[in-house]
Image (cartoon, rainbow, N blue to C red):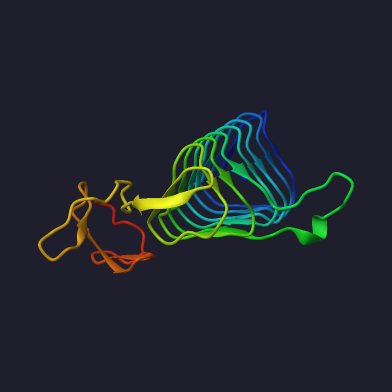
Length: 204
């Protein structure tokens, strides 16, 4: 544990797995059997349940609870007070601990403040959920999701910009990186200049 930072007010139950360079701040609670990667940052009052799996370089802002059944791949960003669930039809009188529904956030997903991710869905790589949205179904890579319930209203680049400009070939262009994105069909976007599963280079 010498290669991670745990604030004196935080609680980390054992056994669990936490990668080097990870920081866990005030009043957070990591339960036993959680798996957390390297260089993650957990803000104040974050809860990570048992058997949650979190990748590398994940940023979780204040007041977020990540419940059993959730898997967050590398480079996911969770905005303040975003909400996860793990049962779609909870009742206080009925124990549904054996019926947790898996939720998967693929690499690079961004969750805006106060959004809700209903359990049992998958958000594709680099999907971007607007603040306050309620996501109730799967979303493709690079989707920009807004509303209650959320729907795809556009595409977001890997660098976090809404894609609106096109080049002469019809490819969407990220205004920050200049990378090109192409729509292979109405619900599929692919980056032509960098593999979706590759980390950014040190220069990016």
